[in-house]
Each structure stands twice: as structure tokens, then as C-alpha cells.
Image (cartoon, rainbow, N blue to C red; front, side, top):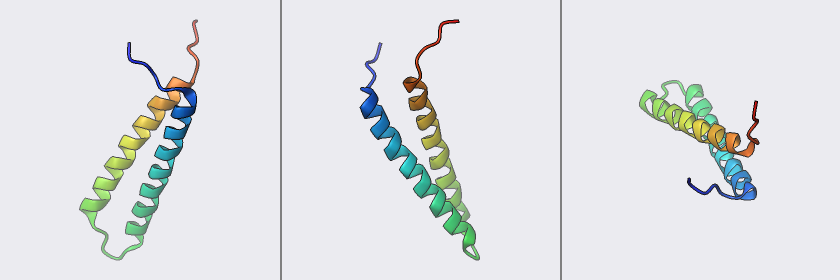
Length: 69
């Protein structure tokens, strides 16, 4: 079993990932506002944004206690 980082380490990493996610979102919005946005860059940024979201969700799930039903 892999050792999980301490909760404070996870919170710090989540904060960094959320900031990166917001930055990608801002860049995507900036591209949308351009007359002729670079579709390849937009697609690449959207994929990065989705990948970040997956990591964020995975880390957030580690923060929740296991519930035994």
C-alpha cells in the first residue's frame, strides 16, 4: 500500500492544483475572446484542465474519511 501524504501536504497540493486549473480556465477564456482563437492550443488547454480536475477529485477523495456501510 502506498503511503499517502499528510493532510496539510494534500491541502497545499490541492491549492496549487486549483490555482493552475483557474489559470488554464482564464487562458481558455482569453482565447475565446480572440477573433481567431488557436483551436489546437484551446484543445490542449482543455485536456490539461480536465487532467488537473481528475487529480483534484482524486486528492479530495483521499481527504474524506472512509465510511463503512
